[in-house]
Image 1 (cartoon, protein in one colour):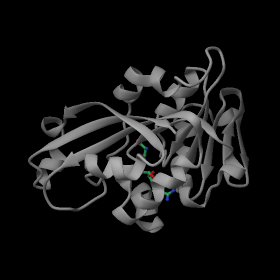
Image 2 (cartoon, helix red, strand yellow):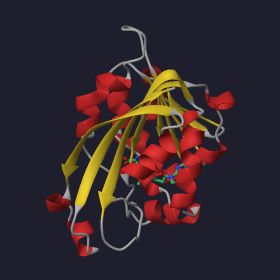
Image 3 (cartoon, helix red, strand yellow):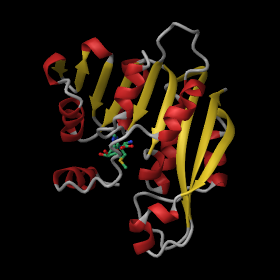
Length: 221
Ligand SMILES: C[S@@+](CC[C@H](N)C(=O)[O-])C[C@H]1O[C@@H](n2cnc3c(N)ncnc32)[C@H](O)[C@@H]1O
């Protein structure tokens, strides 16, 4: 997807993907995300394609060190503004950081970031990141994401599986595709699935008749 597509979405407020509340799957399975980290030690958690997700604040409130990556500066700045963090925020080059809370957002293209610059991570929270990407970028996303994760580190991933016309984002990503993309790098376990059709009028308007959300846990090999 072209960067201009996302910039326009943010400029025009077409951000139906944004959730005002902490993601329920993250809250339920948070302990699995940090499962490789010794108790009492802050985990480094990566949130790729983070938007202005309140999940960044949730993870920080659990005591973790959080790094988001977001293409659109407006989104990153909106996160800090809406979290009431504007006064302790430091802006340097392509990073915005709330020093006290250990939340940093790197403004830029995920695919241009490197572990050499950002370090490696104990866990990755992917909600609406993989599914935001078209197939050719999903194929690049999985190995690039894996390059940031320490051996034994965790991936908590939410996907959508739906029928209907192949317009996106979000895109439908089958279980077979998740396994093909991630199993070279992660031992995968499907934690569960949920029917979302009834609460998703925008999908029904697109002609979708079956919509399920699948939750995955990966352990970095
Ligand atoms: C569907 S939204 C999801 C945002 C967030 N994960 C959430 O749950 O609210 C996808 C986000 O990824 C950003 N994005 C798209 N392509 C990107 C890229 N290559 N690198 C970094 N961010 C990107 C978009 O600007 C958008 O904010």
